[in-house]
Length: 622
Image (cartoon, rainbow, N blue to C red; front, side, top):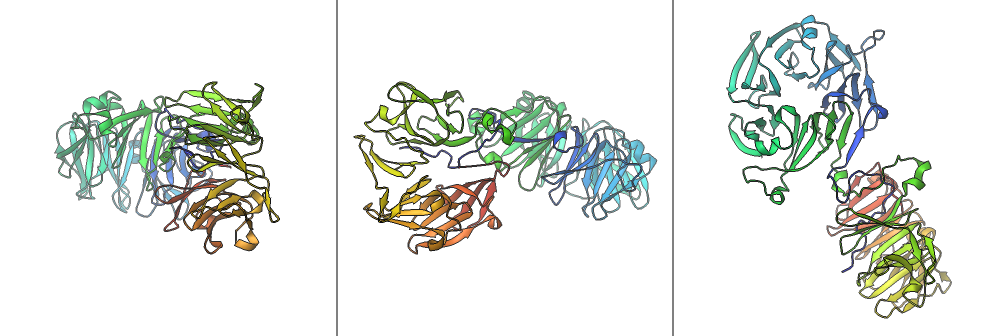
């Protein structure tokens, strides 16, 4: 079986750090050059609207996914934040943001009035003197504050603050799952519960063995203790060991752990020596003891001290660091595998240096063949080893540079075919080079070609300029279709070609719509915007699914009915497409239609017509 279109999209100049034989995660990095006021992230909060709030050494930052807004002290402006070192952030039930600053005390950002209110209470200011603090909002009246060796409660309405110096706390500072009025802390002492009742701080011991980390996980608690990372129920009874202590200590000391993030399959650990990733899915692969639910997979950002990990409502993970800004693990983006290529700044003037990817295919020996715009073909084996083919050789041994690779195709005899802007060639495994077709046959194909197809085993269809040819793979015989029948002529730039269930050929004619060629190859019929309802005559690709033809145009996606001989539905950006310029289309086994566009990738459910977009930061082209 031949494997063409390993990834249907024609990839652009993606500059990626995750590779074929790679660490597993693609991370987006945000730092001071992107608009962040300072690279040291001490605190992080994701509010109910999905906005990211970041406490830094130089002010409070708000990030809406596109741009940053910074809030810094300004003695000449009423309503500005007091203190620039923001050590803790928390949203209240009204959407207001509470910020604790090391050198200014407690601030509230009123989300409606768009200004700060400062609580100039000296005990509060004296209490907030550390870089790692926390805030919890109990109700409209009470705020809880924690620092390394103390806990306090502030009554907003009475302007009274009570604090208690206690044994050294670890990172646990959460509400009780049993009572909203009870606060839990953790440390070498175990777990303590605090309650503010009748103007008094009341303390109760809930668990007496050392706890190095404490947080919520669904209706239970996730803790780090001497057994490892463990789930506790509401009564602080261990119900499941997620990672054994010995396994955890192989990668990071528990005293270095600052944050955990967990979902049903993945566990992330943020520590002073980077991020450590564990996965339930890989449990059997790693053959870890059955007593441990999650198995170690990889570590990254080892040079970074991780301060915060938080999931948003979409399953994306936000990662704060002590000195290098913050990172985003985008869940949608990480559904894709990325091939590591040269890391170059994305700038229009540097396209030739970036060397965009124009075609990609996976061969049966698990090699990934990548066709580029400027520098030939890159081939990656299973280990990630790269081989470059930059020239094509003709029958006389003369070589020419390979540029603008448009298609890489493996036929049923395992031969690799290369379509480019100037020729179609084949890979010769004996000479280990790309050669023109006259090296294999008594004919050549010196035409600009976009696609190669094998509609039936042993018969290959070639396209080029205004030519269509069928090659018998057993004999090497080439049969050319007429370029013109009854005044209907094949125009230059045949972008794509497909075969329907009735054996009719459908030919994409770039700026001139489609041509339908009957099963006997004796009649040509042109279909245009004016006659068939296409949203644009400029068409890039098509995909046939029974009576339906999905048509990628320069102005949206079109659904064409073969039986009705017209477009029956169109899809545009307002319907959810990432861009109206659709370059390629491919239906997978789940009957989802995937599209590459000028702005990311779109997926359409062919039953419900729901559209999902991916990789919106990337430029794709055909």
